[in-house]
Amino acid sequence: MTWIAVLVLALIAGTIGGIVGFGSSIMLMPALVIAVGPKDAVPVMAIAGLMANLSRTAVWWREVDWRVVAAFGSTAIPMTALGARTLVALDAHSIQVALGLFFLAMIPVRRWLLASGLRVGLVGMAMAGAGIGFLSGLVISIGPINTPFFLAYGLVKGAFVSTEAMASLLMGLTKTTVFRTFGVLPTTTILQGLVVGSSLTVGSWLSKRLMLKIDAAHFHLLMDAILLVAAAVLLAGAL
Image (cartoon, rainbow, N blue to C red; front, side, top):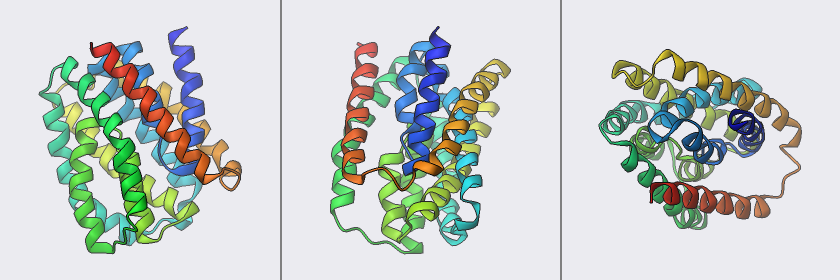
């Protein structure tokens, strides 16, 4: 029953994430922590995230901005590896507390970034990649902070979703490589990630038809609510 609930939530999360480019991991992490524990939830989500980002990239393949991917990835890849290596060294309780606090902090930070009128070029994307890459390796879900930088470059709709997904795919490949190298990605965890990722993938394909129908203002409120609930669940579990 737990896994049925996780897969249903993954379908919903994949659809929402496919529409706006993020949110899947935030919605799923509390459920995965309950299902497999905080230590295993991170690598499971890493595998599932790979599938979700691959499907989002495939849906909007022709609109990927490869210059942004190259600039962002040049710094994000090595810093993601460093963040993932740091995560491997932490204990399960610390991971759960860190995830909860990070989700909570993302609410005001995301709103500040969106309201700041931020504008970035390729150099700015490379600089953003360094910080975001490390956070991605450390806490898995950085979409609400990642998103404003891609929007500030001028990407919208399909170009935004596909380019952000491709950049996240590169970070995800880096994380899974580190997790596998240090023995925290056994075959069972990979299979769990593939099962969850299959539901995310279906949601990503369903999202294309809904892309133009969602109200941006209401979505931002929804994301704040999701962040708040996810943080509360994780911190309550840690306590």
